[in-house]
Amino acid sequence: MNTSISFVNIVQPKQREALLKSKSTPVLFYGGAKGGGKSYLVRFREIRRRLKYPNTKGLIVRRTYPELLSNHIRKFFEEYPETVNWFNKSEKVITYPNGSITEFSYLKNTDDVYTYQGREYEDISIDEITQHEEETFKILRTSLRTINPAVKPRVLLTGNPGGIGHAWVKRLFVDKQYRPGELPEDYGFIQAFVSDNTALLKADPDYVKRLEDLPPHLKRAYLEGDWSIFAGQAFVELQRAIHIIEPFELPKNTRYFASFDPGYNHPFSFIVFAVVPEGTVYVVKRYSDRLKTTREIAEGIREYTQNKGLQIYSGHDLWYPGRGGGPSQVEEFNENRIGPQQGYYWIKAKTDRKSGVRQIHKYLNPKNYPDGKPRVFFFSNCAEVYDAVAQMQIDPKDPEDVVKVDADDNGYGGDDDFDSFKYGLMSRAYPNSPQEIKPTQFSGQAVLDQLLEEKY
Image 1: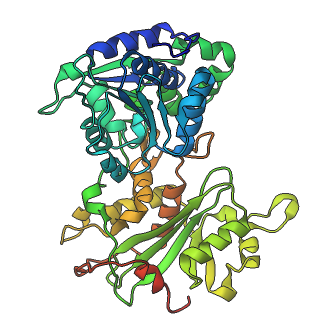
Image 2 (image 1 turned 60 degrees about the vertical axis):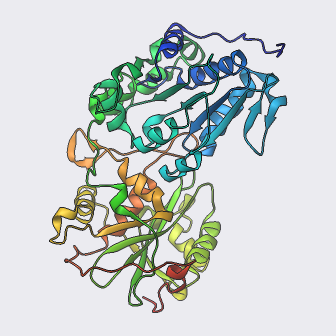
Image 3 (image 1 turned 90 degrees about the vertical axis):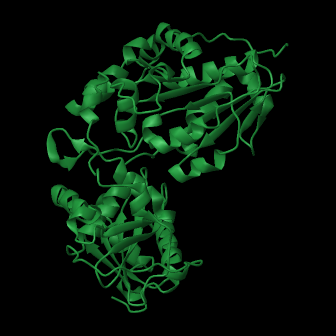
């Protein structure tokens, strides 16, 4: 078949090793440090497989759409310009002349993976797998199958140390500690370093220096590929089946409050909490975005809270003077009708990091209470907040603290939701042992409709 694709791009030795290994290994993990050419390998392998095997399907996954767009879709067009003519923008798929398909998708929340049940792919590539829980990998792998006897379905995973999936990826691919039903021959790991990517080093000679300038624990992880540095998930009490619940109608005397972590280039995070009289806290609403002015954020807050006012606990930088001694952001919020006159009260949050970590542990751990139930839950529409807390890692220099996580170049993947959540919980007294509240059916915006009948 004449596709007019010309493979002027080549793979480097470590990438070639991974390509050969993937032929005999059902699930291959490639990477383990930054700069090893992981995303390029995903694209090269995907297009070669689709052209080699007509009428087959491949899936490329990232956690967010901006990451998917910048790291794969646009790069695909740069490296293989002919594919632009075969791309369906609305469906985010490339349909090749030979009938094969490359599908691009993003899975921001673990629950999103269940929409893939029943689908069929000969190849699945999950880029930055450590950003996902093990459940995502397991469910997606059930879609790996084919009726073509000439094709052996394969999974390609890439990633670095750290993130919400660090522990299970390390167990399976680095430590090779297999559980019943996991066959050792099904899993392979190719460790790649920035030194293996001569193309990157030639194009960006300063990249290694930037890695060397990182804090010591991050340097060990991202430059040296040290998986032990991120071995500990900070909040091991977290269990999705326990802490994430479906929204339900809360008692009429429930009180509401909010937290805010400001941001512009990196996302801001506004979280609405509900606390029932017995002391249990529920995360009921989340509003987050980036590149928004204070006026735009204020409009969003009014919409999300239906103009009913709140106590809002925020980081202290909200009170810092603006550029050139201009108004602080809290003053700008007041000017944009998010102030005391409208029932919105900005309060400086307690920001001590270690105290915040201890407070979160207290609320999360069901063992702290005679009834064996935690004192904080996340409504399912706020799973992003749960994910942000779950991905936090113990600081190896200070086990009572967590590693600070900055957003990537696209403004995603930071710890903004975690900081906002921490501000909220730090505003609460340590709860008693409440009586059980039996959930009732939640409909529409019932929680927010009753939001703060009384003004604080």
